[in-house]
Image (cartoon, rainbow over all chains, first blue to last red; front, side):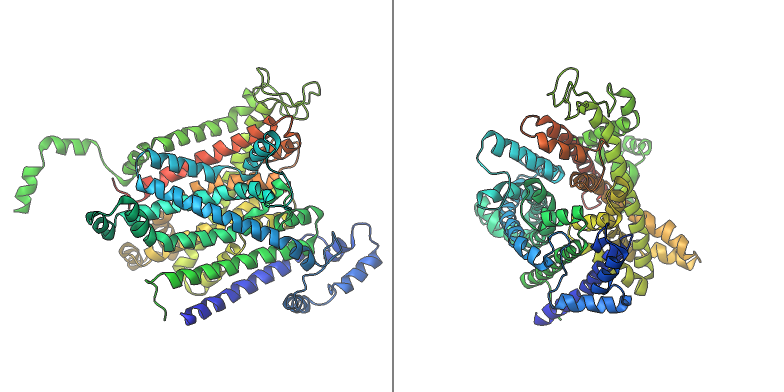
Length: 306
Length: 301
């Protein structure tokens, strides 16, 4: 098991290095002179040269790359062009909000998705199944920004129950979380349904029924327990997407998270910030996927370690 | 013994019936597909959208950029079925006209992604070794950016605009196709018919395109259909975020973004473009589900 964990962690390193390289070249792929971009449109040629030396852009590419990696290892992500503060400070201020939003969303959408999926699966082919699957295919197809506005119209404008922006109280999290989670819940529901349908075909379910166990017990204690491993995997992978996918939901509610920071940075052409945010999003995603893989291996008795 | 049993069992009428209705995998698929009524309805709706893309502009009563400051933010009425926006433009006409933009962006992005992914997957799966390692590492790297982040990164490099959105979404959907086709190729390259073709002296190119690719086609078609819905959604999201279509293009995501400033007094400016996106994406997803069920050999009836 520990050997597996070690191997899985080591296996992430090459991908991580390629991602870092991609992000390093990211700024250099943008048409135009990066030093000019940093210095601003109105800067004189002399100013641009000063910036070039300050950022080390006059050095050969290889040395720039080494300097970039060294900076990363020291937790230095550069300065934001927009706020003139270290990018790490900018990210630190927003990270908690996005994480909180993702965790709350993951919690409710998992519960809703599993309940919905099991309910559809155990009534396979009947109206409950059609209703459940119609709702979940709609949940996958609905534009989340549109859903967000509908929620604002209803709960903020009409009923005046919930705030439309910010992250100051728990109430601020409800609407963004619903906007973000409907899609996840729908995906989990579809997946749970198909795995529970598979489980219902197994012999142990027939045995459990033959013993005269109640259908609820058969569903939850036998069928669902056995499909739980794969459901956990899907939920884990969705968590990775949640952190990145919150961009749109955050934009609708002007939620002070990493997503809105990314959009503000793109609109301002704040390349150090964009670069760092893309790296952070990808890093989170890689770590989560690694943890999910390890969890899956730990939970699944069919996988042997060698 | 067995032959006798079979002769007795096959009633002559049934034999005639079987001959007149030739059953091939293709007709089987069509039959299975037609049984799923919601998928058929979705297909009809998609055909309607295609029709609107070609002929919509000649059917609409208002110019898409016909400003009318005496009729701004009007609710739905007889003259304006979906109301008007902040410049008094007829929303119904703009939404109809936007159909071709969403379809074109979604279709072209997925087509490019599917072509690139299929070629990469075929090469990786067939030649394996170093080619495969490089291609799969590339796919892994693209997979390391969650969801829309990769698309935003690409648009940040290339600049905003619809053409760049197409490129971003195409890159975004390439690795999925590469993985899918690679898996299928790996399974097929050792199959008996591929071995036979190789023994007959067929070239690599012939084996890949004539023998392996057809085997991967059903999976590619299903993935292709499923990707169109999500690509239209991603493209609309990018336009919504201000990174895609630029005003005054009648793009649905952009129209919705403009509507957000008038959400209090004119909610219809937001509601109708959203409905257009929802129904379009929904119909592609339901159609994709239906195709998958019809093509999946594991699901026999």
